Image 1 (cartoon, rainbow, N blue to C red):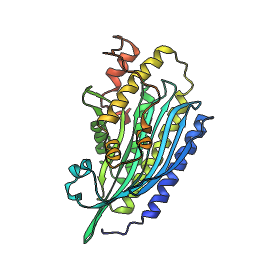
Image 2: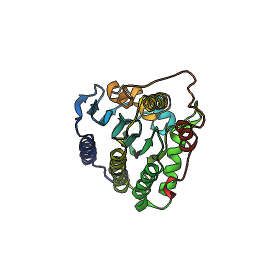
Image 3: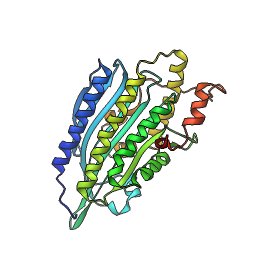
Image 4: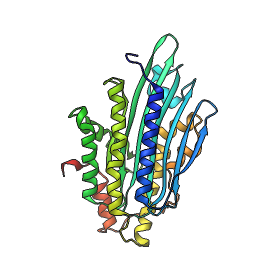
Length: 305
């Protein structure tokens, strides 16, 4: 490794990020509070899982910190990076999903993580990854524009090509192949990042984590009190089903956590409490819901306006 990595300092920085995000979300909710479970993983490591349920604004939200380690990586990891076979590993990060009660307020997701793999007699392998993405159920162009402009601003100090590349990566990753549709309106996604050196890479994931809450809280504030009825609520629950499908079928973090014997409650905290699957559900042609699916669930250059 070309630079020394202070894993304790990295851990403290990520825990501070978890604290900040929880404070901001509690303040916006105005009534709910995160319940914390501190846990220890038998195979090594542990974390702090924080879940807010039944809030004034947030129906269910989870903001987790974990730091786990082990002697053997799962097949999902070595298939992606075969050079890691036979190495011990440490992985730490903050992962969160927020499901507001109001159908007009979008679901949001963010994750930042650091991974280090070691083997005696060989140089450690490390990288960072993460991103954030937005999943609305009703489309507001100004929300999508603001979200992506925050993402663009986070990336700007690191190069002009960073936002376009990571925006495209997000569009490609958060795509529900069996539905042939995007999960939402995207944002940023990146993985295996180490070419900038450790300090700069770790500063970037901190900027991504802080950029998430800077972008999301104003959107939540705009939409949380919008009047809605049973029709809008039903559409929200159907669309949440698509969110669940992606997380259980495709999400690499979910698969990695389950295959490494992670804490099931923490891994699956991303799933909403209420969801609906209706056979062959199709929004009424020409409806607001139909236009949302047609116009918002496809890649667009939102930052351009």
